[in-house]
Image 1 (cartoon, rainbow, N blue to C red):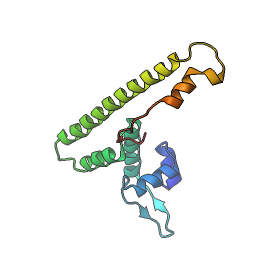
Image 2 (cartoon, rainbow, N blue to C red):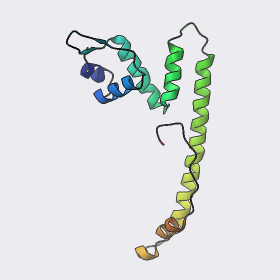
Image 3 (tube, rainbow, N blue to C red):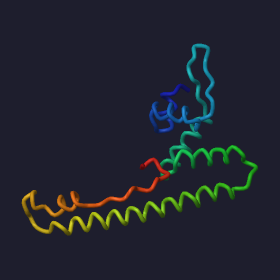
Image 4 (tube, one colour):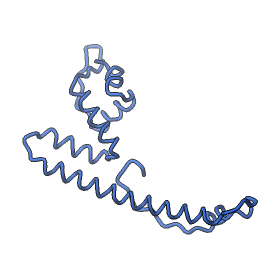
Length: 143
């Protein structure tokens, strides 16, 4: 099948397929004599796997690790568990960050309980005066 059909079958876009090829997440593709890429069931399966990992907010690094482990089917799944344990820890850290964010937002919202002019808005004044800290580096595509 050609790239457009692969994208349709895997429920993604042609651009996504090309991006994953460039990132080394998809296996090498055979080309026809006229230089068209020819994809097969292996590509569909791998693309669905990648898409499902992304739906779980996994980074490309984590997906590379899982694909590498999946390609070594005789190995124990302990290493897969380790990748997932680390990802769960990242999710826990993100949840804490989001809880802190929610608390900050709620505090700002409390600063403006009644209709006022924009000039007297407690939220806008709070945003202008707020001191922010450098954000820790995250492992996900969320930035």
